[in-house]
Image: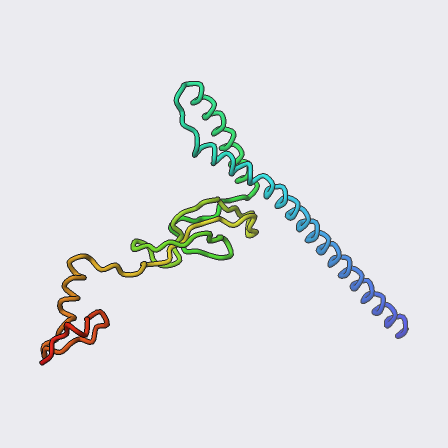
Length: 188
C-alpha cells in the first residue's frame, strides 16, 4: 500500500511538471508570436514613413495660386490626415522635439547652434519627424540642438572703455596687456 501511495505521488509530480512545462511553452510561443507581429508591423510602418515625409515636403513647398490648386492641396492634406489617423490607431506616435531636451535615444542631432535664448541641449528645430510604436523607436527625429550661449561678443561702447581702463592702473603702471606697444608705454 505504501508503494502505491509513493508511486501515485511520483506520477502526480510528473503530471504537474508536464502541465507546467506545457504552460511555459504556451506562454513562450505567445510572446514569440507577439514579438513577430510587432517586428513585422514595425517594418511595414518604417517603410511608410518616407511617404509621410513626402506629404510634409509637398505641404511646405506648395504655393496655392488658383482654386484648382487649392482643391488638389486639400485632397492631399485629407489623405495625409487619414494616413496619420490610421498610424495613430496602430499605436504610432510622433517623437516630441522642438523645445524639449535632446535625448540621443529619440533624436539625431545633425546641427548645433549657439543660442542666447535656450540653454544647451534644447532642441531648436526639427528637420525630419521621428516616430515611435509604443516603446519601440521606428525612426529618430533629425534635429538642430542649442549649444547654449555662444562666445561673449563685447558691445561697441564696452570694448573701447575696457581698453582705455586696461592701459593704465591707478599707480600709472602698464597693465601688462600684450596689445600695448612697448615703445609707447609711459615710464614713471
